[in-house]
Image (tube, rainbow, N blue to C red; front, side):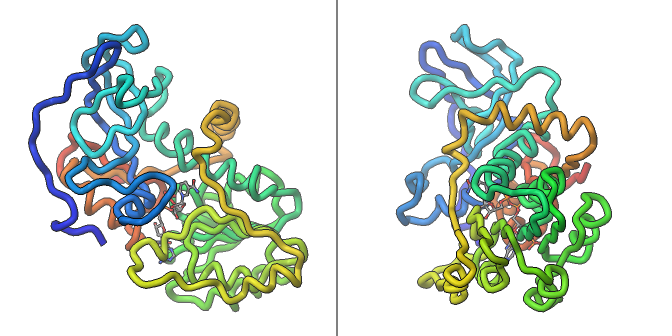
Length: 328
Ligand SMILES: NC(=O)c1ccc[n+]([C@@H]2O[C@H](COP(=O)([O-])OP(=O)(O)OC[C@H]3O[C@@H](n4cnc5c(N)ncnc54)[C@H](OP(=O)(O)O)[C@@H]3O)[C@@H](O)[C@H]2O)c1
């Protein structure tokens, strides 16, 4: 877990954007499990965060000064703001994307943001969800998982089962989001509950957590079953060698497929998914929840909430908010 020895709060002069750039006052930080993986000095899909560097992370800010035609003062922009009060958008730091007027920044970070897009492309493109599928998703009450389950329903899945860590979360999935059932992995035997809930096996397992839950689901796949490897949060704090899933051999028997993906490969297709998502949100078919933690200084503790299961829905830090918490 991140602690006081991992991250320091320091004061430095406000940065100055280069020519044709903008100064951005950071308002909201997207708190993502992958930030924890960037803190490991290990090969990954991005370089590790260097000692003394600002913690890398996506966020939304407001343009407060600009020398570029691309931005206007007052624009809300999304980009890799990092965990800081001010960021720059320019050639050296990379461009930021302007958020269309009228979009709530919290929603821009959740269903219209990276986790909503991850749910969309992971389930539809990678998982190939089809009508009649029995779909199981872990991390189901989180930002990605909660959207996966609702999308599966929209795409005609016959049964959608979520796996989450508290009875409250399980209740939210079934009562508010329309999942058919939910399993509390902390208090119930996941294997036997899934056998009861999915008697014909699992056609599509969307894996957000890895570890034992992945192994259990691998052992219960139906013929031609698919596993979408989205994340493995149960292992991100591990220090020893990774343990492999013993039940992988079942993929041979059921002629199954297990495939990983990175949402970075889908950036140019975000607009199509955001349009579709906007329609479903407007119709009330996709519901969302944002869990907001106030104050930049709380960002390290907020990151830890992802690992203790303290969040429901998308976890966001309101950078200049009062210390404390607010659940909309
Ligand atoms: N492939 C990609 O491009 C991509 C993009 C975005 C996210 N991801 C991955 O997707 C997953 C979800 O990310 P997110 O941002 O949507 O986070 P999230 O689901 O909102 O938050 C993480 C959730 O994981 C659950 N969890 C934590 N430790 C666990 C454990 N040991 N066993 C089971 N569940 C555990 C917690 O809920 P409980 O109370 O249920 O334990 C927690 O709320 C992560 O693995 C992330 O790395 C991948």
